[in-house]
Every structure is written in structure tokens, then in C-alpha cells.
Length: 115
Image (cartoon, rainbow, N blue to C red; front, side):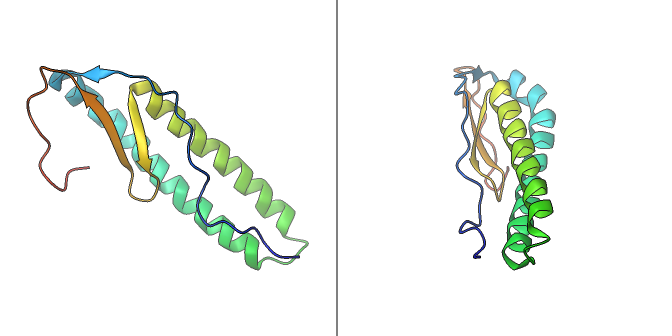
């Protein structure tokens, strides 16, 4: 019986909260966003590892690994939902790329290489 044919989670669904941030709001929100994005990146790594384990596991081990994988995917979706509720949209699981709308008073740009 072949293992699953995917190596990355399915695209995330976001609630698309169209929130615009002022520079002050963005700076206040950034520590929380960093923590949530770090959780997303970590969870993605865990999921990728579990998928690899599932593909190479013996048939008797597969149900337990699949259960862990399902829970990890649910946890990842919770993190994505939390990020969406803050007003940010996840673009990439692996590197934690996300975007947020800047309000008209947010005139400062992030330096290149800033996540």
C-alpha cells in the first residue's frame, strides 16, 4: 500500500479579514505575529517529518502516525486562523512569509530581509 502522495500541507484557508494597520498598531502587534508565525513554521516542519515517516512506516505503525499528522494539521490550521484574526495573511508555510495591509499613516517600510 503506497503512502500519501503529498509533502506539504494543503493551502490554508484564511478568513480574509481586511484590516489595515497604522505603524503604531503594526509595531504593537508584531511580537504576537512573530510567535504565531514561528508556531506555523515549526508545525509545518513537524508535518513534513510526519508525512515522511508515514510513507516509510510499516502498515501497523501507519494509523498512529496518521493520527498525529491529522492533529498536527488541525493545530496548523488553528495557528493560521489566529494569524488571520490578527489581520495577517499567511503566504508560505516553510519560511513564515505573511502579509498585512498598511494604513495610510504607516509610512515606514521594513528593511529588506525582515520577516
